Amino acid sequence: MYDYSDGRPTGQIPSVGCPFTFPVISSAARIFLAAGRPMFTSVPLPTALSFPGDTAVALFQAVLDYQGVSLQGEIAVQGLQGQVLRRTESGTVPVAAAEVFGALRLFLDGQVIAADTILAAEGIDLVTASDVRLLQGSVRTMTLAADIRASAPEGNYCVQFADSTFLEMMDGNLLTPLYPLATALLYPLTGAEVAVAAVGLEESFTNYPNPFFPSRGQITTIGYVLPEEARVDIAIFSITGELVKTIAAQAIRAGGSHQVDCWNGLNDGGREVVSGTYFCRITAHYASGKTESFKRKVAVIR
Image 1 (spheres, rainbow, N blue to C red):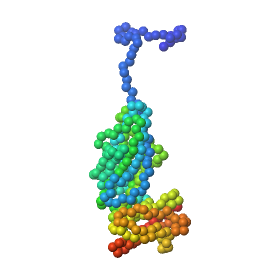
Image 2: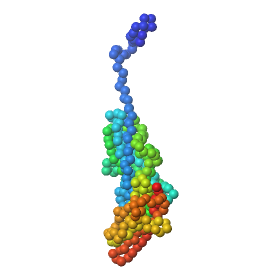
Image 3: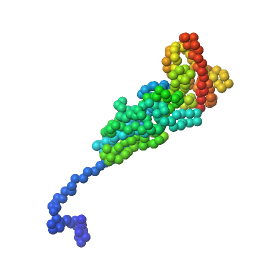
């Protein structure tokens, strides 16, 4: 304070009966700082060929890197929400999670923090039994995995998250919801593609991804299940029936699931094929004397 008459500082005189004496000390005050937001980095996963009854199939994985503003920062992970999509020739369509999956589990550093074995919701809605705490400086790996239902229909499926609110978190200081910051990601965010194939050669014969983009370095993997040992022929043909590429010729394959045969979009002469629809034919000559042969469409996009 200043005295306006001479411009010099002036003190304060307590009024009569004032209970304070100098120095005056205020009561303690608690200031709650924002705990900060974790950085969220998605981990790319390859397309997985799965069969009804398979367990712990990874659908999505990410790293949470939490460097809080306050040294006392603490975040609680409370759940995850998403949607299951099925890929069709015209795009993707939503499907009920229970149609494909028998159970969903959310892992943090390999430990289950949430599980849903009922799947009553149309999409994915996992809630942790108790808050899972992330302390300042934590770097944790989060994985969403599923058990494939025994009655799951054949097809290619994935999980999609609409926006950053898909991961439910709580600021431990302010007790308010918060959302992670995504690094180099665009929403909607899609997890790994899972190709569900039925058991048996005809039902299990598939290729993934389909369509595929050879110009981007993609290859398509040909998957199938053999009921017994067989000599296998696999070849790619044009829509007019001309041989384009021999993938396997009289290859000995044991009974069971196989995902070792691939096509990179080149013909037998080593040249790139043009965009379009091709046919992949598989023929199995079984040790028992039986022979089966099937074909399916393969789409190439340049």
